[in-house]
Length: 222
Image (spheres, rainbow, N blue to C red):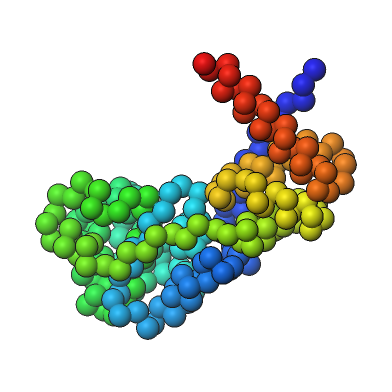
């Protein structure tokens, strides 16, 4: 009988600053968000696919500047100078336009997150379109091996697991560059290990088994 892996996709979803990993891949972006007082424009647009780390990055920024973190459907806070809008393409456009003007007038800061470039949005307000296209737009950098390895180590540590460096090296070079995928893999490997040590041999065995299962699934679909 095959072992069924637990469906535990829990992430450190409070996006704590202590869990945020800075590597060579995102060091420039981290420095920019840390030095928000020196922005030439009060608005910044961060674009990236799901699982790219946008939300964690933005939560760190919001804590640094003492800002409000907003989602689609949220009302605008009556006070405040620093704001993050997650899934900004789903946010009320009138409110978003108001936030752009408010932060510009009050020397505030506005960080917008989206999976889509503003040119791809269905924008009903011409003035909002001009505001968005005037913003500095940054693509969320893809995590490098260094960053992936550090995130893996942190996720395993949260489960009181200390993998070998060889395990982390092997795994970090062979998994998808997605932070949500990392948590899924950590959960699966913990169950797959069955009490065994987290060595390079275990990582290789897990990867090979996963690749074989993927190949079988592809074959079944033909």
